[in-house]
Every structure is written in C-alpha cells, then in structure tokens.
Image 1: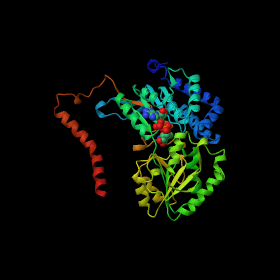
Image 2: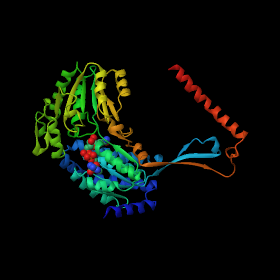
Image 3: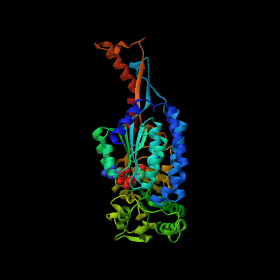
Image 4: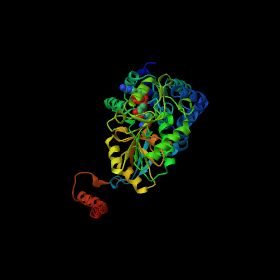
Length: 472
Ligand code: NAD
C-alpha cells in the first residue's frame, strides 16, 4: 500500500472514534501482550541474529520492559484517562475547571537498532494507551527484529489502526513529510536535528530520545570491588551499544589503580579469558559501526581488551588510559565496548571535563559522600542517572525517561508515556443561572474595585517573595 493511502486510512479510522474508549485501548494492549508472548522464542532468536544478544539480556532489557509497560498501562489506564479537576477562577464562578486527556491522532514512532524491540514497542504501548493510531518505523539495521515486528503487528492490528513501515533514510524522510499528532524519535542527535526540522514544517510535536557522552564520576570514597562490577556490567551490557551506558570514567587518582585492576578482574569473571567465546557477550551491529569503533583505538593506550575480528563483528571489552581530551574517542558518543579512563585530583576538574560535553543522557556517580553526590547531581545537567550503580534509572517505569538539551526533549515510560501521547484539553464549564456582570464593559468603579480585590489576593504571594529575597 502507498504511504498516502495508509495515512488516509488511519485518518478515517481515527476520526471514526474507534480508538477512543478505554475498553478498546485495554483490549488492544491485551492482544499485543498475548501476541508478543506467543512470539517470545522468535524474538530471542531475532535479537541473537541482529546483535548476538544473550537470552538473559534480551529478556531483561527488551521483553520484560515491554511487558511491564503494557501491564502498567492496562492497570492504570482508567485513572490516567479520567478528566482532572482544577481550581476555577473567581471570574468564572459558578463553574467547574478540568483538563481532559485526549489522544493526539495519528502518531509516528521512529526507532533505532540497539534495543530494536523495546525502543519500537514501548512508545507504541504509550501511544495505544493514549488512544492514538500508530505508524512504527523500526530500524533498517536490525532486519531480523524488524521482520518479526512487522509480522506480529500485522497479525494483531489492522493497518488502519497500527502499521509498520520498513525502510531507512528515504522512507523515514517520506513519512516526515506528513503532519502527525506526535512524532516520537529515538536515535542519534544528528538525525534528531533532521527529524525536528522536518516536523517543524508540518508543526508536528516531537519527542526526541537522543544519545550523548555519559560520564561516570568515581570518588575515592567507594567500595572498589562493587564499583568495578557495576561499571563493567553497565558498560558492556548489550556490547556497550546502550544509549545510557557510561561513555567515559572520571576517577579520583587515589583509586585509579585498584579500580582498573578490579575492572579487569571483573571483565574476566563476566566473560572469561576470551570474551569472543563467551555466550554472554554480543556483537557489534554491522561492519560500518565495527570499523568506526576500531578506528577509535588508533593511537590510544589500551590497558585491557582491544582485540577484534571483523568477520565476526567482535570487539573485546576495552579499557583505555592516558587519553587526551582532544582524542577522537572524546569527540562523539562511543556507543561500543571502549571505555576511556581519566583521572582527577579535585572534583572541580572532573566536573569541568564533564561540562565540556553537551548535556548527556545519563550520568553516574560513585561515592559514599552524600554531600558530594548531591553537589554533582545539582551542578551537572543530565537526563537521568544513578548514584552507586548504573542503568537502573531506565528499568524503573515509575521514573520519566528522557534527555535534556543535546540528549533529547520530552520523556516516556509508564504514565509519562501516556502524557506524551495525550493532549490535555482544558475546559471551563459554567451555566446560565448566574453571570458575573462585573467583568463586562463599560468599565467603571466596580471594575476598579474588582482589580483591587485581585491585587489584595496576590499580596501574600508578593510578601512571601519579598521575605525570601531579603533572606538570601
Ligand atoms: P539513527 O539516528 O542513525 O537512526 C534512528 C532512526 O532514524 C532509524 O529508524 C533510521 O532509519 C532513521 N534515520 C536515520 N537517518 C535518517 C535521516 N537522515 N532522516 C530520517 N531518518 C533517518 O540512530 P541509530 O544508529 O539507529 O541508533 C543509535 C543512536 O540512538 C545513538 O546515538 C544512541 O545514543 C541513540 N539512542 C538513544 C536512546 C534514548 O532512549 N535516548 C535509545 C537508544 C539509542
């Protein structure tokens, strides 16, 4: 089917009102849940084909994430979709004020290849929960998962409600020529700019889930073994092709040596002496990404790993030290199993290095010193992060997930996804049995009196503000 035909069909379907009842949305989510469960083995094998992903990582970071999103939406949909009452202004009394969550219409979800299943389906769950029609555009670089998703979505939904469009730059560009109720894009900052520009032409609202260089700051007051284990796990999970993986380490010079020793030991514990033969270590998505990563090793001081095999798209878990800040490894998001390690004496030096980069999607802080952790959280802008662990902010669907500045705008997961795909329609309802004549012209003394009342009501706020100012 031609794209414009699909869009016309979805518009008609949406306008029919079929997607709007809570019951319909719940039924669709259940159908999706059951279909995904029925295809679980195929999902594991498709993720293994595209990314060499171990079954545990596939279940933990792809399948369960989507199941949790569906379960949370089904359980909370009634509450989320209810109108929310608000206070009513004195001029509109007697009256009732409320905001009503409404679907945005026909929505577009563009996904990347690194978590190709959940980064396509989790936003789709939010879009469906909010009552929208959906077009999914999975990545062309994870073909096995894209083929499977196309099959599942076709089995579960009629395309006038939810459809998959496959393809790459050309097809996505074509999709972006149309106006959408919402465009939800996950991918690189470079393409995020292209998507936002295209969406501006049609005034389609966007959520951008982008990448960035995520620092991990390690103070000298830490449990070195625990820190090493959590860093190695967070970095090399999914072969470090994770948007929230630590991108580089800023380590207090006093713990550098023990931390590096502990990390090397931990790599060995996780993946054995030869990670190439480990069933728990994946592969780089394609040759293009592999070549880009291997080139980053030029002229770098490799202290662990570094071996690679293009035929297998294998790159060992690699640690670098003595990297200069102008080395290519610090120019852009690494997005692969290479971890440069920098040292600092004073925390200000670490913060200065982190602040040289555009706002990252994540930041990780390891310390027993609570006031230091608070200071870093306060001073460093980042999308989300953890103190004394890694990746955990993503798996908690009660937390909003999203970036800031160059790492994105907007958020999702749980209720936040529902909010992203909803328009909150404001409404003031009044009646005919009383009208406040005082708001209408001709304006006279009674209007001046009314304004005085308003100013009087504002007085406490002004006083509090003045008191606060005088204290600081
Ligand atoms: P990408 O930006 O190259 O591609 C993402 C999607 O955009 C794909 O579906 C692709 O077909 C499409 N696309 C690519 N070029 C396009 C163009 N010129 N015009 C229109 N559409 C285009 O990203 P990727 O390589 O698939 O994924 C890796 C990136 O995604 C990394 O930067 C990573 O940090 C980021 N990412 C972010 C998150 C997050 O949640 N914030 C999650 C995963 C990945």
